[in-house]
Amino acid sequence: MNDAQQNDAALATADRKAKRKKGLTVLAVAVAVAGIGWGTWEWLVASHYESTDNAYVQGNVVQITPQIGGTVLAIHADDTDFVKAGQPLVKLDPADVSVGLQQAEANLAQTVRQVRTLYANNGSLAAQVQLRLADVAKAEAEVHRASDDLNRRQSLSGNGAVSREELNHATTQLANARSALAAAQAGVTAAREQLASNQAQTEGTTVEQHPSVQAAAAKVREAWLASQRAALPAPVDGYVAKRTVQLGQRVAAGTPLMSIVPLQQVWVDANFKEVQLRKIRIGQPVTLTADVYGKKVEYRGTVAGLGVGTGAAFALLPAQNATGNWIKVVQRVPVRVALDADQVAKNPLRVGLSMDVQVDVTNQDGKTLADAPRSSAVTQTAVFGSQDAGADAEVRRIIAANLGRSNTTAVGAAPAAHASAQRVRGTTVAAGAH
Image 1 (cartoon, helix red, strand yellow):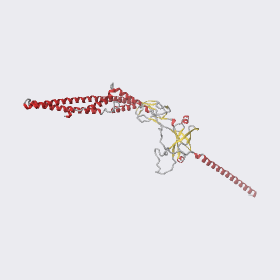
Image 2 (tube, one colour):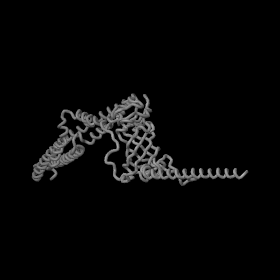
Image 3 (tube, helix red, strand yellow):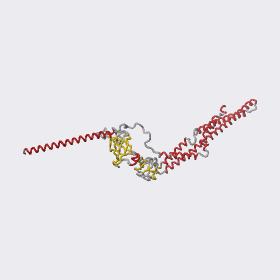
Image 4 (cartoon, helix red, strand yellow):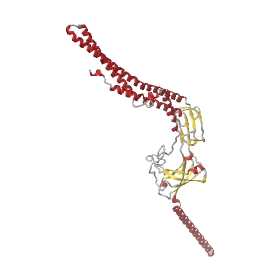
């Protein structure tokens, strides 16, 4: 190779080195600019948001379970149907509970009549006390008469006007009279005890409020509720899901028959990593998108609360990290996000749908745990409260039907008999002084 060729090769090599140096310089500048841009974006934008795609729609899944056992006669709602609160869903055979209700009603009617007898007995037992007092008075008169006869005969026995046999006969009559008086006094005591025993069951109450009547009335209410529970109503507005019940099926109390999902009351559980929880606070605004609608539909929400434990801690089989070979796994904590009700009504969501969640963590004034108890119920229903509305009316009807025409007298017999007994107890037996 001559000198000219060597010079050309040297120039070519120098040119390539210059171009390479220039390229590397441009690349370094581009990397530096990108790094500065990324850092600026991270500082100004990304650091103010925490996002995750591990988020799913959740809602209340209300199970429909019977409170009594029975055979299914009718099913009024199927999967995907919308039902209103109070609408009948399943009907069970009411034959058994109807028989139980009739027995309870008959027992209440019989109990009312038995209690009426207790009040009526107060008057008859008070009359018995008066009758026994009359017997005591009669026995006292006999004792006085026999005593006078014996005294006269004893005064005449000294001059022989009265025989020994007649004197003994008078003595025997006095002894018999005293025995009759003692028997009459014992009869008064027994009659008073019977009156007191009967009054102990009636004092301070009426027929309607008597403990026996109340116990029988409770049985009627129990049987009435069982008869009402043969029809299963929807406790809330929502959509039917997971219907498993079939016609003719014999179901036991507590068997899941179907579920009701109120889709207007859904929320999102977003599972954030441990390191993402540092800046998340209750009340922070949230932006969400659902895979079912795509990026075109955007939901607004707020952080309603942070879970008190990781998903692994509440798993059916919690991890035992103290055994075997251990590998650290980043844990996630569920964060509940409350959704805007109007947006949910406009674009309905379903339980279990995937969501993308982005939390604006700029405002750090909120708390990570609620510090006050909830002032009202999370959710409630008034459907079952109306089932016992007719029970009290049925009890009142049965009691009124069995009080008889002397309703007022029977109910007021307790105070009257009590006053009569007080007068009887206050009467003194004159023979008791002898």
